[in-house]
Length: 132
Image 1: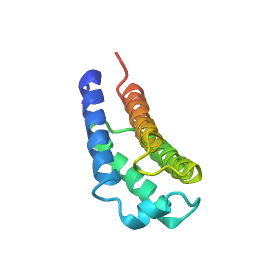
Image 2 (image 1 turned 60 degrees about the vertical axis):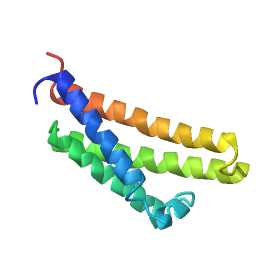
Image 3 (image 1 turned 180 degrees about the vertical axis):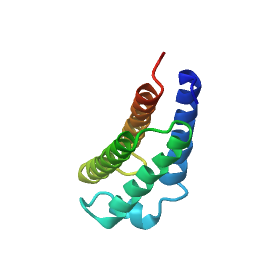
Image 4 (image 1 turned 120 degrees about the vertical axis):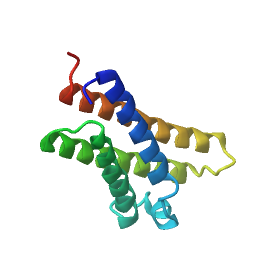
């Protein structure tokens, strides 16, 4: 795809759909329960699935191997540490589903993920297609 605007929309759409599929239907109880334990295979698996799903964005805009690998690694690290921090914040504060701050933490977690996709899309399109 050579149109930067169309490419940006395609990449963002792919990342949004990927996020929903990986964060909801594909996330198991095992992953959800263990994301707050640093280094636990459940959290690593969840973030690995998210990072692998990012590869689908490369169908719309194909990066160099090095750029693609960097994007996938950064996606993994940001997703992993965001989920880990959220889980620990909620647990240490003792927030429950009925608490407004529980949902603020969930919302902040999702916002960080979404902003990560904006950065990924911008970098991917900007470094691969450019603006001119």
